[in-house]
Image (cartoon, rainbow, N blue to C red; front, top):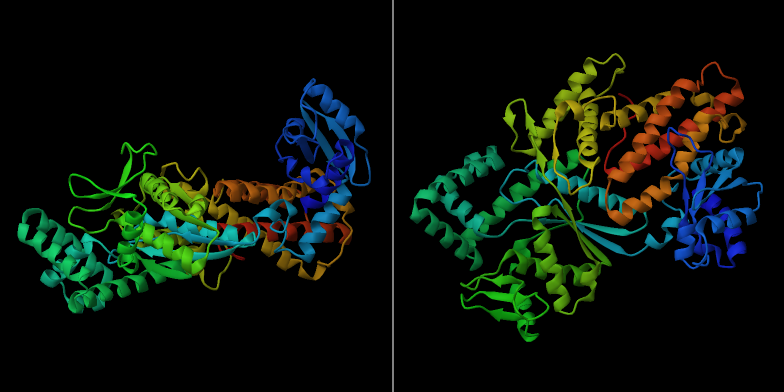
Length: 578
């Protein structure tokens, strides 16, 4: 709803500067709510007006700021215009602020913020997001959690802003490790154990064969031979590989369901393996693939032809590499899905790999490579359970559920729940997500169970508690809530702070979309929850007059809607009781 107020200010700036009002819309921002409460609701930087050609560049900045402010008219929407240091502040009519914000949240709660004209340029088009991408025949490692939840957030955000989104899980299902696993299973494997404990057994076999391969040349030779059988597409080897793949994907899907994550397309290196020769042929035709003295096939990425930077696409024995299959996958996806942008979500150790991938695609003449993005993230340190260092994500989820359930049982505020285990798991997963999203994605962070599951402070538990508390309030007073109400009781400081903060939602979504960083939305929702908690204490519904009660319920309902919508974009399922 900030768009209504931005448009009012932009209209005045357009008249004074004699430019179309759309020039000013992205330059006008809502003032963040802070402890040092400013009277202003909106502001515009005069420097930004200069940079956009709306104001002449010569002359003293403060003089220009004051002159512009003096030409702004006060009206039914803008009550006061004040010149600050290089900034013009606008104070809005508080009744109009409450009326417009609550009106939109009543009529279209799911569209609030995401349909803002500030985000109009982001709508439409098709975005492909590749994320999670674990390895076949290995249990879902806790390290894959970051890629999964970050990719899910990006896909959710893009969809909320009006993109068609294709979620791709690119499985690590090809390579020499399958030679080791195949040879190992032929030596140590058991179909009976595979049926009873599929991934545990494959993991045991993989660990055992690696140990044997370190000291036994014949095991390494058997692994190389098994992988050659796979590449020759020998039936028996392929059948075993397919069995490993199907078992693993089924196990992964159970984990994704618990996390509330889904994929539109499962793919893998194996699918693109047979397409690599076509990639190499295209590179040769363009004169891009060169053979080194060692017999490897490389692409010069130096830009100067001196091979100071290059990518290897073919081993000396003629087999392809991971990057060769990635090139094939990118070309296939562009042909099949016709994406407008493609986003890869992996840890930061693969940064150079993706730089090389995008350079190779550009060298092949594919301009759309400019719209390929790698979102990199750091490592999680110290994620362990009571039993010791964690290996699998199931252990982390079980630990989160168990600890949260214990906390809920010892909490004086916990309600009687129909399914406390499910609520504990949902809240526990929320806590894991928020812990992960609080800082810059590139940063490593130290995991601490006690901090993650705290009910106070900036945690996922606090977000869920705030949402559940608002739901409880609205349930208790459901008979008093009306579709329309008098907003005049909402001009006190607490109510205005909440309304001012709601005004910023579209700007936070824009910043999140531009940077593909969830921390901006997390910080916004945390502030919203703290403001809501204060308002809940200081603005009682029970015991107030009917008009005051209805106005406050309308405000709390609006806050709950925005909180829930923001949580869903982050990949969190809001709970209504806890």
